[in-house]
Length: 328
Image 1 (cartoon, rainbow, N blue to C red):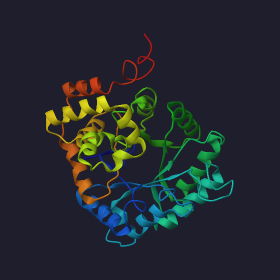
Image 2: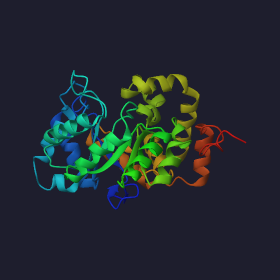
Image 3: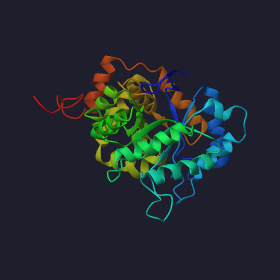
Image 4: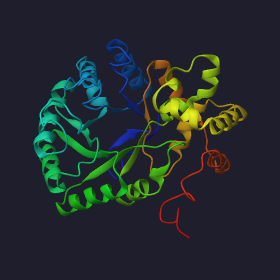
């Protein structure tokens, strides 16, 4: 396993991040525990979850599964850089969601209880909250850091200008501020290259891509549909992408065949080669899928291959950051 710094911090994390969103809804607790154990055996030390995962209001099902795994001991908690999130609704009340200081602190306490730990390594804002001033948000986050309940703070689904707002506000408080941004980023969804990634790199904020396979569309969806083994490729974001981008995906799968690589592995390898990327999130439903994800680390995405991929999945505008991507 390869390791890198999380953004500009001294914290070392694995180049792949284990996502747990399937734990509970799609993967049983025993199987989830087995996947986390296997990830640890493979050297993955970066695990990501969220208080809303499990998708039953206020229950925090996925965090509880991670917590029962930690409770088994054996150095599990000590070995893992644990990331979770705050923002989504965790109750029926008007203050049971968002990024008010009240909710941030209450949600952190609840997550700590479900996760059976005394601290969260990376506490991420799951979405931007435009109705709450940054001074209030950082007051709450700084309190949690001072209390030892949170080590670092990150964001998720922020625009580039949100990153600037957040970091400049933190700088005025002499706080460390954001160290990571978790955003959707894959070959089919490259808009973060315009503003988000340039802003993040300027401030030393590590990029943690979610949906690296675009919901399964980049995992060989066309071939799987033909074979009747599509799984995720027949629903959600993947189904829409397959319908709208069939020609692109056909060219993509042909290229993968020519190279003798699994489409999912090449899609992940491309992300690992991109500037500013710390660790893409892999969301395996089985330990075997986790093994497959590690194969992406052995694929070299050289300039020629990168150019071929740009031909199939063109970047936004002229490519690269704005304003050059769209201006003369």
